[in-house]
Amino acid sequence: MKKLALASLVATLLSAPVLADVTVSDPWVRATVPSQKATGAFMQLTADANSRLVAARSPVAGVVEIHEMGMAGGVMKMSPIPGLDLPAGKAVELKPGGYHVMLMDLKGQVKEGDKVPLTLVIEGKDGKQQMLEISAPVRPLNAPAASKPMEHGAH
Image 1: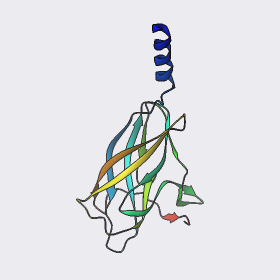
Image 2: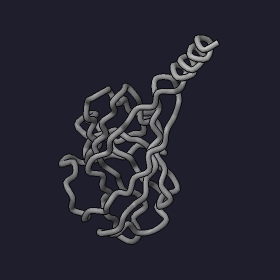
Image 3: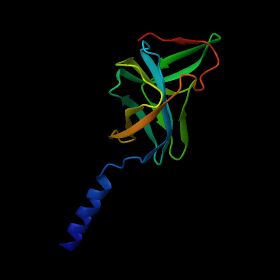
């Protein structure tokens, strides 16, 4: 009977979802001017197991998407992506001019010194999702950005 109980316990533990432990470093959001309707959130993500950033949310924006930037025909273009791989043990940087979280349809001005709440949705290889709640400080409008002209894709 003890062996059966132990086997059952081991089977339960082995079938439990293994969620990646994701560390968020240096999160920040770029400030906006009063009528501006979009801004970006940036950070560094490091997962201890292969996983994926699949979504993000924030109460300050009507729409939040994961975006990438890249050169196309000599012009910097930005477009939404369905997710961003987080390889185990490797830092993935979300930065101006690269991958980032785009906050659109802003509900108000995002001012330097504010803190923006963000929920990151991380998905493990097994499809299980976990939410990471972070608070990103707002940095000045002139925080480093891409140096090339940018064209924003349609939404």
